[in-house]
Image (cartoon, rainbow, N blue to C red):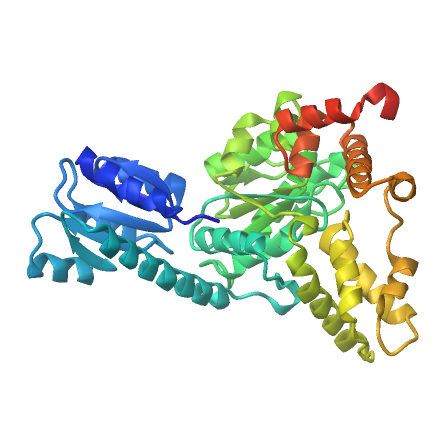
Length: 454
């Protein structure tokens, strides 16, 4: 992934010159002509490195530097100045500047400083990642760049009180991300209350969330404290929030807006201080269009959106996950370890893992139990892994070339995903990680239609 450089200078010639220098070397550049615009750009674009002019109208570079460095995980900042002096350099360094360069900047000097700053940033990011604390039972395991992005989002979100919306397929580890945010927040010593909105019947979910008074409805034989009250001063995790009824959504919105709940059967409001983290495996934008989810609640929940990618997009995580699941299972069950051969691990990496990490964990445990040999080899995988998608093996036998097999397999994969998403193009495109326009092209290329393949 290309490093992103934010260039802040009120002189267009300087911005243009630096942009040409960086883009020629393969960097991505974003530009700002003044301090206020730069701060907005930094928040929106999350640059890896900043080059900052000192003398600017509206807000000088020193003030911009102070504000940038006050942000957790801020990028390294290199100061540019045509009025350079030792005093300014010392002051900038005290405020956290990485280096100080006089104008007009020489391209060799600029690129050397950029490489050094980005190298330091990588080390800093790695140290910060290692400092993320997890409950051992809920550790997020992996080494992929995709998972690193999730960790970075967790680092940024955790110290705040902002609501977080975690999106991802079933089994990817949305609960682990939510627990990591709580564990690394200022509320870590308070309650973490989890509610699975999909598992509670619609007529009971309001009672679960907000509580009820004795006798408020048939079956209410005792007073019940709601989950929001139980999470006071802590965090509430609303899993599968897309399955809430519109009526319940309205009440959750009130909690977010007013910070108060009202038990069923009571006229008394109760103030609650709760951080809300929500998760969904649905495309809520589609649910909003279909009138199934409130747009105002969506915007309240998604102040910080985090996407946990499916396991098929991060095969590098399969091996460390196998090791983690095997170690935990053997430790919990006093079970003798069986190593997985390199070829077996390669076979596991190639599997599509439609059930994601949850399916992988179940598979590892099944292999450890069922395989009687001293190690797990490729031939053992066929006995426990799911069969390929219908038509995939047939296409392998029927294909006359590698390209033909790839196209047949891709067609079968797309048909499967379309069926899973009830032929909703937007939801399917999101599920397979491609733009809708590209999906339409594929449907035309392979002659896929709901009438023929539904």
